[in-house]
Structures are given as C-alpha cells and as structure tokens.
Image (spheres, rainbow, N blue to C red):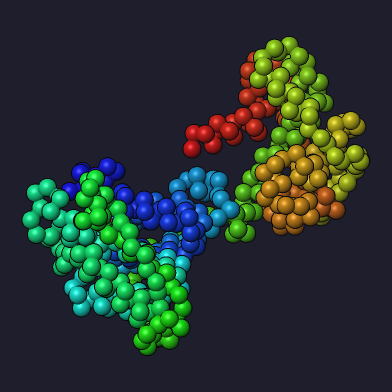
Length: 422
Ligand code: SAM
C-alpha cells in the first residue's frame, strides 16, 4: 500500500516523530513496538536524546537488527560532547516495567491495532497510568481511508485486530486523557486526494498526548505502583562521550601527544634552518599558506627555562624549545623538548576546547602514563633523540615541497578533509 504515497507512509510516520523530536528536544525516548529498530536508527542521530529505548514483544526481530544501533568507529575516534545510552528490551506493552517510567516521550507507531481490545485497555493503563511520560505519540490506521487503498479488502494487515475510524480513535483517546490526566491533539500523515481530505482524514491517524498533571485525572492512578521489571534486556550500549572523564582523557592525551610531536618537529626544523630555506624555494600556494599559519602562531611564553628536572628528580636535561627565540643545543643524554602547557593550550584549538583552562589541562594530564610533565607541572616533556634531527635533515633533503606541505598540514587541512569525508 505504501507506494501510493511519496514519501512512503511508514517514512512519513517516522518523519512525524523526528520533526516532533527536533522541535521538542526530549532527552529520554521510548519506542514501543519498535520492530526492526528503524525509527530508533534515525533517532540516535538526534544527540539531544540521552536515553533511547526500544521495546518489542518479538525479541527475534530486535536481535536481527539491534547491532545497527551500536556506535561506529567515528563515534569512538571523534566522540561528541553529547551522551547517549541505548537499551533494547523484549517485553509486552501490556506489562509494567519500572525502568520505563519517567520518560519525556513514548512513541507507539502502528502498534495498538495489533492488540486485542482488552490489551489496548492494559496498554492505556501501562503507558498513561504507570509509565506517565510527558508526551505520547500514538499512530494507528484510519479505517475511513481504506476505500481509497487500491485492492484492499478487510484490514490492512492480517495481524490487525481492529482498525478504527476517526471517531473510534477519538473516543479511546479522550477516555485515556480523562482517566490519566493527559490532553490530546489529533493529526496524521498520508493525505487523501484533494477534495476528500475532510471526508476521510489521514491514512495514518495520530494522537499527540501531553501530560497535564494528576489533578486533571478522573480515576485512581497507578503512579505509586511497585518496582517491577518484567522486560528482558537484550542490548545496552553507552556511546562514547566527552562528558565521560575516561573518554575525555583518552582524546585529550591523543591530541597532546600529536601536538607536542608537531611542536618538537617545528623546533627541530627551526633549529636546523631547513624549514625556511626549503619553503622559500617553494611557490606552491598551499605551502605558503601553511608557512603563514605557522608564523602567525602566537607563542605566549616568553620565559626561557634552562635546565629543569623531571618529576622523579632523577634526570637532568636541557630545555630545547621555549619561545622560538632562545634555543639551547642538546648536549646530554636524557634530553627533552619542553612544550609549555600554556603554548599547547593557546595554539591547539582542540586541546583548548577539551581542557577549558591551563589548570584543567595540567590536572587532566597529571596521572597519564603517556605524558611526561616537568616537575612544576607547567610543561610537557617530549623525548628528543638524535634520530629526530637526522630524520628532519634527511626528509628536508629528500622531500619535495609538496612533501613538506603534507607533513606540516595535518593540523588544519587534513582534519577538514577527514570531516568532509565522514
Ligand atoms: N513501530 C514499528 C514501525 O513503525 O515500523 C513497527 C510496527 S509493526 C507494524 C508492530 C510491532 O508491534 C511489531 O514489531 C510487533 O512485534 C510489535 N508488538 C505487537 N504486540 C506487541 C506487544 N504486546 N508488546 C510490544 N510489542 C508488540
């Protein structure tokens, strides 16, 4: 039947929910009778949602498709600031489960017509009386539209127990509101041809219920019910989020390791005077742009540390890089390039965003085994080996200007490409 609509009717129903989510920004959402998770699959990209739950009586259906809800590699490589937890349950909407209470939005898309009328009563008591979400979206076929569906005799699906007219849906919905303290608006998707819209209504009728509070409720409500958990948890996953401290540290350490290496290379290039010479021969616009970006970087740390010791006090080493002006030659084993945290923080936007302040940056890096801090905690120490310098000289001699550009450009240019690709 769907092909008579464009987009197909099932997509229009899901789009209705997505538009509602975009407008109302619920944080906790449940899809009842979620089937093969197709609505959940779309909803997980709406990162204002923090908890997303799917329930279906048919566990096999959920299991078949639930893996598509797992995070993908970019979710791990570039975790977002948002939080998302997805839980999938096998269970019947006629039974209570305390884990599903207190949500912002519950959707029931083309579900109730699969229940007997007695079970619809149970559904109403469970969803509106026990779960008491702030909003509920219920969609169900509108039987008045059926004569317009080509080749249809009887119900739209063999498993349907009923198909309601608009008046029947309305009567059920208003009773629910009266009993459980909700108000409802009626709408739908799948428009009838011009001129017939009023007489038949939408192909799928939709009720949007909003909780008004218990004072509007006519009957004894179920809100004090016990702590039951009748559903079976099939799948549960937390998406990586920068709000999780471990994820934040992992991403930050990766950035710091990368940037301290870049800054070390820069120092080595400056020191060997290869960089500018190589670049000056190059008219390539891209290289010039990069050269300018490097030169424009403001290095706020003016002081020049001569000799510092590491946190154990065991090793002595020379500080090789400070503000680009005063540089000391390496002269001993256990040498380090010293990259002040203030420099890292001010010239690496992602480090700045992740850590928010230099003090925070120090605190976050303090116990990280991959990061070596100076004794006073003001700088990251990057091991300097003779090989580093040799590598730089060799690569400068061997490489073309293009190679020079790609080596320097990881920061801005490649990241943009990467994001575009995704
Ligand atoms: N909501 C989905 C959608 O829009 O694509 C699927 C709708 S499908 C027509 C109806 C779903 O309701 C089926 O996946 C079925 O297994 C589920 N269902 C039927 N009775 C149920 C019950 N008592 N509790 C939970 N789910 C039920």
